[in-house]
Structures are given as structure tokens and as C-alpha cells.
Length: 208
Image 1 (cartoon, rainbow, N blue to C red):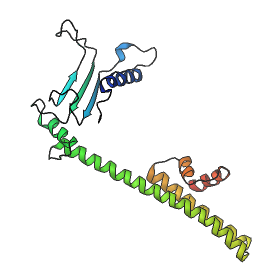
Image 2: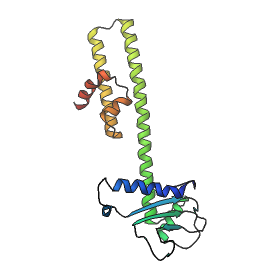
Image 3: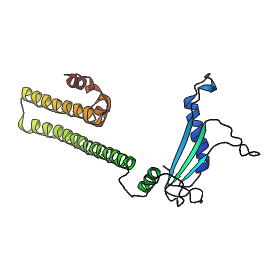
Image 4: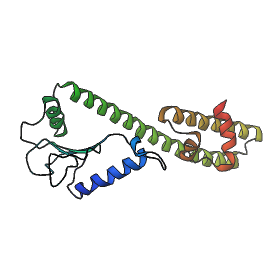
């Protein structure tokens, strides 16, 4: 998806080189290169001809009927096109890029997928907010525990019990982050700011 005309033509060369480098490992045969199609979806007309679609392949400058046939193509889809040059499904998709939703099956499928991804991202943001809250509560818990112990002279056994309860709470938070956000154990402990010298303990608690 391109929202700017800036260097859009040269970007096709860059993307093509990146794709080819990825497809063709060092020492591999050129016959192993797959057919590639680079598609730019533009909410503007990149060439000013009113077309909904512009397809570029390599042709001989001296004889336009002679195609290089290198299996590489670049396609620009123009959401602002005016000509009758694409089928109804593609036209419906380009209308969707302009913010118009219709009953076309492709558009409906794309719209549902985008809604699903947005909901997942919102859930992730919500859970990250929860994780930040957990960090704040963790810090406050340490401060309160230290203050209470100093003011009330808590017994060692009671203090240990409180520490164990806090550890179990943090372990539960780590499990929830790993399950709901799909992050690794280390990443979850990074977010919750678990000290390096305590991570082995929490790793064991999480596995339990």
C-alpha cells in the first residue's frame, strides 16, 4: 500500500532485488527463481491516465511485441481510476480502499479480516496496559511490604508468606502474557521487570 508518489518507480527495483535475493540462495541456479508480481495499491493515480490498473513487464525498446519473459511484473492498482478496465471484483476492492464497503465476497472477506486483526491488536494493547498496571502494583507491593515490616515489626515467617504470594501473582501474570499475547517467557519477564537473579525462580514457578 503506497500513500505517496515519492520514488514509487525506483521502489519497484528495490523490492524486486530484495525478493530475488531472498528467493535465490548463493550458488543456486537461476532456473530456481519463481515468477514474481509486485503489487502497489495506491489511493491516487500514479501515472495520471485514469486507469484502475497499470501492469509493467520488460519489453524490447526497439520492438514492443518482443517481451523479455523474465517472469517479473509490477502492478499498480489505482483506487482513483475512471476507466472501465477491470472486473467488478477488483473495482469493488478499489472502492473499499476509498472507504466504500459493498457486498462483494472479496471485499467482505477483507473487511472481516481487518476487523479481526484490529480487535486482536486492541486486546494486545489492553493486555499491555494490564501488564504495566501489574508492574506498578508490584512496585507498590514492595514499598508497602517494606513499610509495614518496618512499622509493625512483622515476623519473618509472615514476611516470607507475603513474598511467596507476590511471587505466585507475578508467575500468574507471566503465564497470562505468554498465553494471551503469544510472547516468550523472557519477554514476559522483561515487561514485568523481573530482576535477572530472580528469573530462574519465576521460570520454575511458571512451569509448575
